Structures are given as structure tokens and as C-alpha cells.
Image 1: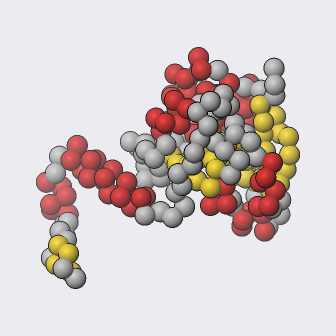
Image 2: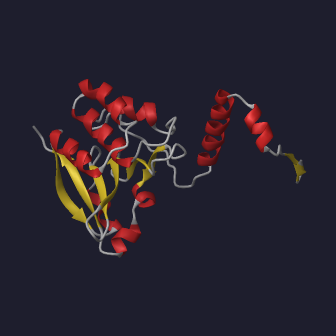
Image 3: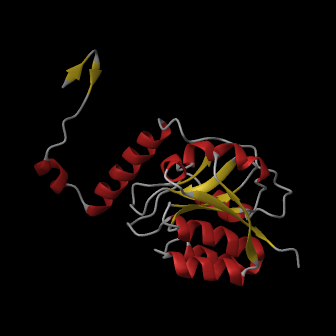
Length: 198
């Protein structure tokens, strides 16, 4: 079909099911990448390559990519970065971890095991000025339930995965694009975790 001088193909179910599973997967991933390119929340940020607080190899490998299945979530993405940051020897563990679905309790156990401790609590977006690369941010609801986590790659940008679906990429966003204001407006807060110096 042609609309406003542009040609479009109307994909029907019979056409879709005639494709191999590999073609279907490649088509979906290409569509998702194009769709997310238009996402105004996505950001490019200059990351200090000399900053030892950042697991650059893992960031470069996963930023802007999609999981091949549903399951990996924000807690797994954040924990993987924290685990890798604590020691480059943990890279293989971090690569396995990032593909997991991780519940809050094991997430907090991993943070503790890798020497992260809560250093402050924020109740508003203006408080983000204290964020440093390598910090972990955790968004809580008013009932004190951890709902989201992200890993700081700069003072104003985080690596995160919004959701556990395969259509949600691992991405770097400005903190205010991730900030869960509805949680803050209903008594929630953001906790900042930082690795203790050894």
C-alpha cells in the first residue's frame, strides 16, 4: 500500500507464519530497534573510560540491545553492573546474571555481598545531584516496596532495563527520564547505594 508517497507492506498472519523462526526473530528485533530509536528518553552520554567505577566492557556489550526472551529485569541489570564493577573477574558471573529475572531480596543480598550500602534517601528529583558513577539507585513505593533499580554511569545518567519483556532494551537514560515520580508523590523515595571503599 502507498500512503503519502511512502510504500508500506501490510503484514498479515498468513505471511508472518510463512517466515522461519529466525526471520521472525530478526524482523522483530529490527522493528524494536527502529521503534526505540525514536524514544526521546534514550540518551547518549560521554562516559569517562578511565573511571574505574564503571564496568565498561559490560556497558558496551549490552547498552541498546534486547534480550532474546522475556525475563531479564531491572534488578538483574543493575546487580550485573554492580557485581562486575566490584571486580573484573566477575565478568562471566555478570553476563549470566544480566539475563536473569531477579527478585528484590536476592538483589539486595548481591549488593551487600559486593560491599554496597545505602548512603542516602531522596524524596525529589532535585536530590539527584549527589549521584556518582558506580552508584545504585533503587525506587521505592509509599509502602516501602522496591520497584525499580538502575546503575549510575554518570551523575545524571543511569543504565537500566525498564520491564522484563524482550521488547525492553538495556539502555542508558537521563535520571529524570527514569525517575518514578508517581512513587515519590505517594510517599515513596529513592535510595542511593554506594560501594564502600575497601
